[in-house]
Image (tube, rainbow, N blue to C red; front, side, top):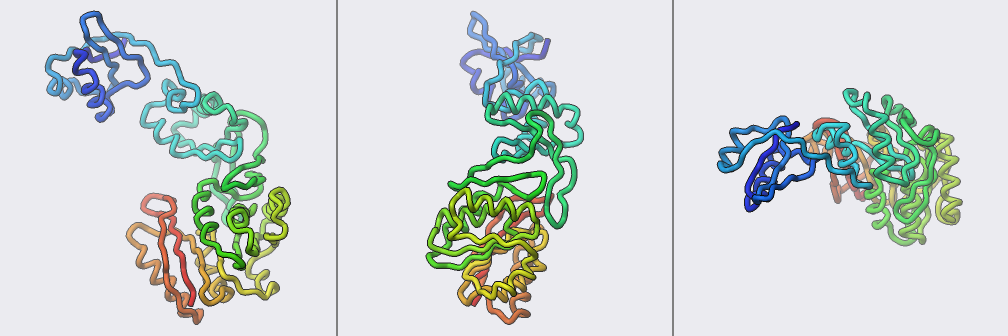
Length: 347
């Protein structure tokens, strides 16, 4: 038996919206009705009767047992009701990624006891998900690999992910990949012009290079990574998508690779915010006059202008004049810290 609100039918929609706004409507239960034109709404434990009575003075409170709504296939929120509280559901569904047929969860410590039930709910909601895993530690510094624990499903962390019109073979156990950067990869790809020479530093399994090649096939791209597994997957992805005439995957530290290439580039993509400051001077040495550097870094709240000044100082030290053409927010990283992309034009 739970507390319910009995309200006249003509006021039911207004009451429902009011309770939703306050977080007092129990959305997991079916609405009730009576023959004398009343609607019965289930209330949450936090509902304040005094505030509701003030808003709807003719309404009545009763203890009734309203049946649970049947879960809708494909609706994760519905499937998690009864397992988690509403606030916990909202927190959880903002913290998962889908890579191919693998779902990766960021489950708070307090919810780990529910991980198996959560995993099963996700597989019921999304029939194409074959593996549900959760983050189980901190990302490694150099290779950026996130430790994962498989909760349910097939015992593998390799899959094929499709984005921006290309197929990307990934192995989350051995090489970094984030689907959250898909939109930024597409944006940069659209900016590339014919006959440009493009360098992708820390290119991983080559998602940026593949997106560019798909969008602008009349260019040349070099993608560099020091992770042997990422390099192997990048080479395979180039072959799968038939971009061998456009993309050259290279293995090694970009500081060692660039002097051997003896090239200057029209565009340099730097998608490694943890290390990018250490490599900006290098990028400035190898970009053509009039070229663009897409520089991704972490920025504390309110420090965008300070970051611009730091970029200008590094450019001055490298003997290059630059203009910051665009600054784009690229998601949050930690409390009061966000990722930003600075599009830096080099004179």
